[in-house]
Structures are given as structure tokens and as C-alpha cells.
Image (cartoon, rainbow, N blue to C red; front, top):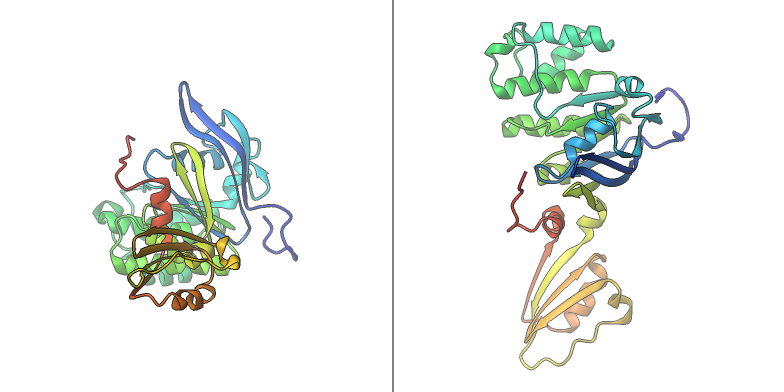
Length: 308
């Protein structure tokens, strides 16, 4: 993708159509179709074995699909896989770095491979991540090696970032800084595919999310819609009559009643509900946002455990 070109791009940053990868009788990814717009921060969710890593490897051309197609930056992920990887800065879930050299030498190696960046941005980002680049990689803690991998990923001059568990092994301060770097990448017009098990982090930085289950794309949602959804519990006065939901609200409110207790779920703006709820004269009223965790639990109920 040419970031110097004026006007909106003519293609999605990432697109898959019926993307499928099977290993004999085992299907790791099954009919996945999604698109990620240029400049979007897109969350990829699911437990181990759901198909996230398989999807990423297919996008990078490390695997050939059994069926379907994928493109990154308008480039075919199989026929143009080398050109795809030039467009992408990829942080794997288990980054491996040369252990016999120090942090500065590591950044020099990646600078020679990828081009771009000079010593000043390297030093600034290392300072933000509280990373000592003079230390040999072999002497670094797991968290420090993760910071070094993040540093070379964010400094790469690539329009698309694919981050697989970027905050793994980091302390809360470093996690917060990484999330800020993701936001800054989005503000700079970069596309970010953010794969994580930490739902709270995805909820903070992503505009849309996709949830995988058993290799299938089970749910896609906009975070704005999730944030608008609320769960409401109210206690009606004794012997309250039947509920009469105003017609404009019937399409956006789901109700369940057990005696004097009523549960409501809605994705409508609360302002449109509160006047009606007040007219019921509830004895008690509890309102809470649904949040990403509740949406995730609909796809992966908490009592289930991954068999992967």
C-alpha cells in the first residue's frame, strides 16, 4: 500500500473469502470471510485452537489454504506472499531473537533487513518501554525480550501491523504503553490486526472484533455497538400488572420477567428507555454495560474449556 497516495485506498487492508485450512480430517480454519479497512484496529479473539494463528499464517503466506482466498494490502497472500510480507510488520506469539547479541545489535539487524528508522527513534521507543538495549538478549528476562520484539515491530516502516499476543509477559506499566503505541499506529493511518486473550485490552483499542470458535468465524461486532448495549434489572412494585413496552422500543428491547423481577437487554441508547422505565416506578433498578466479555461468553460459555 502506498501511504503517499492521496484519496481513499481502493482495497481493504486485509480481506479473506471462504478461507479454509485443513490437515486431513482436522479443519483448523473453516470458511473464514472477513475484511479489515485501512487504518482500522481490528481485534481477533478466541481460545487456543480457535484458528487465530492459522489465519495469521495464511495471511502471511506461511501456509497455503485448502480453499478460499486472502489478500493483504490488495496483494494475493499466496501468489504475492513476499510482497505481502514487505507490507507487514509481524509480532509472533512466541518471538525468537538472536541470543548472542545485545539490543542495539538486534535493532541494527532488523534495520538492515527492513530499512528505515535511525538511532534516535530507537532510543526514544526503548525509553518508553523501559528497555536497556545494551544488555545481551540471553541476559534479558522474558518480558524484556518481549519489549525488544515489540520495539523492532513498531519501528518497522510497514503500513500493516499483525500483533499476536503483544502484551504477553509484560507488567501493567508496559502493557499500558503498548496499548498507547497501538493507538498511535492507528492514528498514523496504520492498520492493526490485534490478536489477544486479554479482552479488556481489545476493548480499549479496537474498533471492531471477530471471535473465532472451532475454526469458524462465529461473531463479528463493532465496539461502538457493544458499548451501547446494556443489561437492566428492575424490581417492580408488588402486584404490578403486565408490562406494556412502547412500540418504538419493542424492536430493541429483550425482556424476561419472573414475578416482580424484570430483566431487560438492549442495544438502544439508554435515554430512549429511561423515561419508560421511570413510568414503571421500580422499587430497585440496576443498569450495567454488557461489555466485550459478555459478547465473548455468548460464543464461548465460561463453563466450556478448550480441548486444544
